[in-house]
Length: 378
Ligand code: BGC
Image (tube, rainbow, N blue to C red; front, side, top):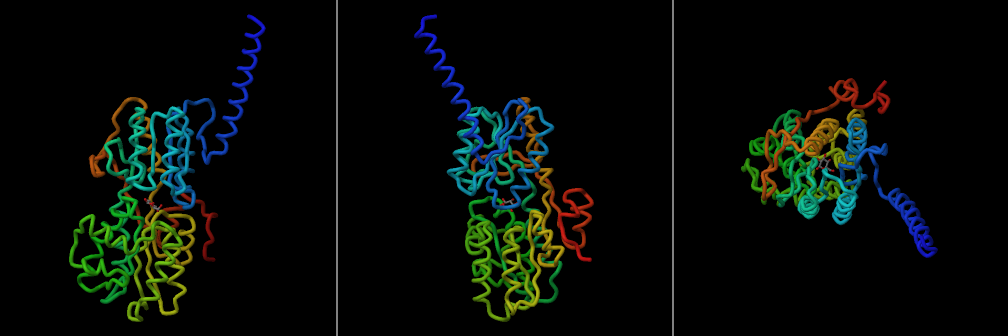
């Protein structure tokens, strides 16, 4: 080899070493966690909506546990409630050569573009917990039975109400999340007959009040109501809305009240706000997710119930579907969900009510949480 050739070779090698080193550094800046760095092939990319809610940290932890037993490596990225970041996360994972994308969208419609980019790259798309809407690029939907979540919340309120004229405060999730519709649909199915017969009086939504005699709401009717009572899945929005509702409510819509709160995070904000109002004598409030802070609220009597969605099951389902795809198979399905353009195959998992009476049995005795994670009454 000529001298020039040797210099070229040395320089190229140096460049390669430096860029490999920089590559390693920059990936450690990503909010990423690789399930495994033991030389397994990176095949599964997972994108979760935000680290700001304990719910999604639960999913990350359970994924990390479950992925240890698979022959593939996976990488988990968080979108921090930002559809642009979500898209960038998906592109990063596609460029790393994943074969299956597990995506929990922040915004159901915006995520269609990510699903389509994945499809174009020959990558299978699993919509995780929340359905990606208006694209045929979704292969499978891994989910809990979200209508059942709403039904259980509604039923809990019904079961704890006596007499007539009980004030009912309604709250919902984000309009950009298809689940908010499913939760509300389930709750409304159960609550509506009890609103129509006077057991409950809606205290904070004239749109819901105007539809109180209608059991099956259209998507647009639900959107109108949700638009009025949305927490946007945000603790502060929930608190501000509850404060505004209480500031406007006459005394006869206070006293002993019933509150449909869509999930645990918003339930804690709303519960604290109601507890601080001197005209509220008692409240029954729902939740969902069995987040640790809400389990403590339930033990302390500050939140009435939660709907337990065993994230270990959801994660296991997602990984099984991914492994089936990686083997070239077709995952089992028991139901489809229409996403606007496609009936997406799915196999929804059941959910369970947890309150003060069964919290220990369902969450501690089952090994889901440790007894020492909570302060118990002496
Ligand atoms: C999930 C809930 C979660 C909520 C807010 C929903 O799509 O199903 O478990 O509490 O989003 O993040």
